[in-house]
Length: 398
Image (tube, rainbow, N blue to C red; front, side, top):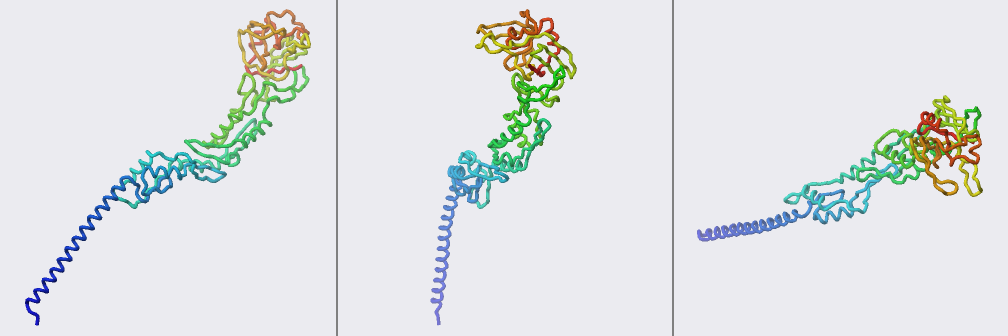
């Protein structure tokens, strides 16, 4: 039978064992706590300079990277260019700098937490998203183009196969196909050097040819206008706003007018008859029977004819008074003051008074005419000045 001393000994051993366990537990707990604190401190220090685990910038995972590392990764791999090819928008990496270190630092501050976080962060390239939306919106656009009563449609997917959107604006790329289409339209509608029948004041019908008179499509200005219309969603373009002319007027003459573009206000010059007719709204308002045009032939085979050029021209401008300057056939210079000057050819021929002229006969122009201008008697020039308008067509025929 166990003695009391034996029982006490067993109890003491149990107490010692339990105490040892508690001590070991406390030692283990303290060790764990110290290790955990060290780990937490290390993680806290890491998070001060590194992105959290689940962070994407411009589609590139930058978790656990520093700002410098993330910047390099983004600039090497991130898509930064949107391109509309046919009817599909694709994204690509241009190879250029996508983001600055300063911008990545801002993203870092936004996702920063004191301790590591598993939260998902996704920073999008707003410029790229805008470009995608802009390109998707333009896919099916078209613009109607009206010129001289004809209507054409320019579809984005037909003339601009590849479009990008950068720095807040569209880039429509290659315009060759559009240029070719406009050129084919221009050949149909332009009135430059166009030939057509014209009824003379005498009642006879002849064929005349536009020289400086007329207009053509200004392709250089029209293409940007079409691109702008597509970009802004404008439905139509009026062709008359994108034409040009020869000579003094860069905007063209005769657009939209009847009678082959001449209208019914014009001037007719007959070289053979040395006569000029002036019409206003279809009515004859003035006739000059004895003008003198340019000398028909040179005095020698080496002298070029100063004959007034035939064709359809227009009054470029009116000036009073004026001084006409040029060279005589012998190479000497002349300077002739006139009261009224109304040029109509590209080379400088026009209507003016000629106070120095004494020979006003019907044959004066054959050998003693002007340098190409239409000389008018000083007593009649004011009447001409009063009826002539700038840009008015001048038909000169033999």
